[in-house]
Amino acid sequence: MVVVAVSAAFLWVISPYAGAVLWGVIFAIMFIGMKERLSARFGGRDGLASLLTLLVIIALVIVPSILLASLVLNEAVHAYQNVSASGFNPNGFVEKVLAAAPDWAQPMLQSALGGASDAAGTISRVLTGALSSLSSAALSLGQSAAALVIAFGVTLYLTFFLLRDGRSLAEKIATTVPLDREFYDALSERFVQVIRAMIKGSLVVAVAQGMIGGVVFALLGIPGAALWGTLMGAMSLIPAVGTGIVWVPVALYLLFTGSITEGLILIACGALIISTVDNVLRPILVGRETKMPDPLILISTLGGIAVAGFNGLIIGPVIAAMFITVWSMAGKAADHVRRNESP
Image (cartoon, rainbow, N blue to C red; front, side, top):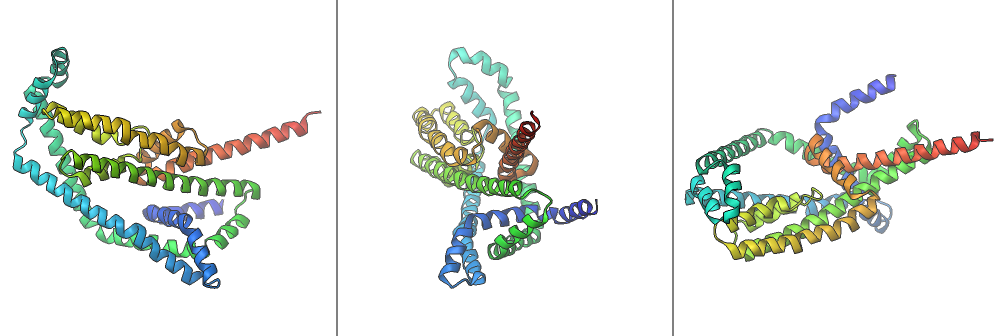
């Protein structure tokens, strides 16, 4: 009872930095192989190898992420300035949509939009709410800058510690936790397997779809191609839904505003190229390695996002994999007991 209470208190204390801990563990799992190769090259000097590996992580992951975020922010500001300068008119946009629609679709659009004035009011409210939310998020980000720096430092420090002492720590935990060693090893193996599959698979798919989408947008002359490409890369992390959240509305906007050729090209590229990348790569890189069906990956990912935000992209599938592993081993144990009890 005391062990449970103290463990719960410890988890409660570190909960504000749960995300930092998670990403420290992820970095250690993904780069432990590099650290061990460096350690062998430097005569078993684990501290030096861990430090060099941490510098590689900063150079290959952290710095590019910051640069990309800066680029996307500049693109977003530029796009907002363009919209403001152009004097976006919701009434005019809705009227263009209604005028461009075929005759058979007019009644449905009229019913759905409730007329140009009502639809324009809805669009204005949505845009106002979105801008308000973005302003609040930016203010919150500025106010919590110190907390972000601390969390970043925790991630780097924990990554270094786990790279250097992770295997010995895992062995100490294995001998301490009240679990059968075979059961513990199976859970640990599945945990590492799913982490690697989700990171490698999701990263490859996101980069591929984001780059292809950004290039298509740039070739079509759509402003903010880097911003749209990054958004598609981010949305690709959500299985099944993915990049369609971005390119479908943009394609419809092009069609309804008279850019028929560009809209049709974007639909063709989105359906035949961008989405195909996800359909081909994700089952190979994620589904096969995690040994989980696609529907379970989708549900656990969406559920993880709903519960834990961005970190849920990893937490959801990991918990689903642990669930399957635990019940599979419990079933094997029950079957073993039944066989022993049978005459």
